[in-house]
Length: 372
Ligand code: GLU
Image (cartoon, protein in one colour):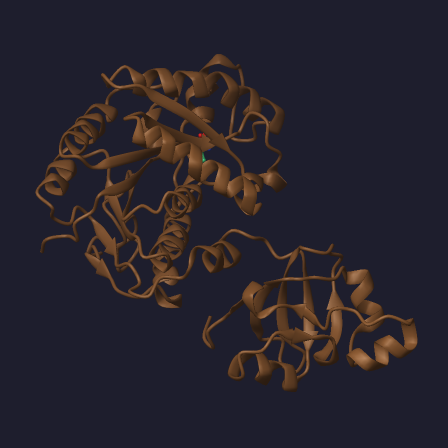
């Protein structure tokens, strides 16, 4: 089977390939990947690399035993390891590489998201290969994406890639856990990512990185929703890149959705984290789901959590707690507690002013499908 043609791709390379034996960066697996990148560029294809490995590459400079490394040391490891990761990649290429470090915070604010997009596009236009990673040395956990699979999917959507290649130490997604079942078989193509696919992904974690199969499926879900074909392949096997150069499937292909979400809806659904919840009555559920309406004060029956104006919130049905949508709220939780359940005219009478009636405007709202 020939895979769909692509022009711009994000390649994610995991820590297990960059620092496989815990003793700094190694060229062992990177050579084949670098050769592949060179070949693609010669064919006129554009590559953005998302490279993990800063913590793994920096670890050997510190005397720490066991797996419970304090966060402050992990950040220090990332600071020293990140330069080594960059150095290591740069050695393979005759063209310049650019370091792009970001955190989840940079991606969730729309202006900063656009700024990353412009920088990466400018680099690509000038023949420079962006190498992205999370800013592990500085970011605190609550500002981080946390794993580079999801980060790579976000980067792929930011730069409007056509393909995302997740290179790991496993051949792809199997129908059973291949570590426990000898007869496990590889799934070459996944058409639709649903709970049964997540069930297959459970439990297979990497020893050196933060991601496992689950984060790879999450990444595939984000990217495919944006119209990006996503592959998991074994980056330890150089032959897989030759397969790719023949335009054949090297592992598991998660097929892109045909009607991808718009950039804004994608960002809303997959990048923004909900800071609270708004519980609504059945009338509001119907208006949102079936009438294409905005969320108004009158349908709100409860507020959970503390959020500010402009924060993302989940809208849930008060009747059965089903998630209906996610949206950007125009009021703070504190304000909503006072005006919930009231009509615009009742609020005007009580408070002497008539507020904006749409608590969440339709344009800032992303509906969940029934079985999400
Ligand atoms: N950003 C981390 C690093 O470079 C890797 C996260 C992951 O393993 O997914 O060390």
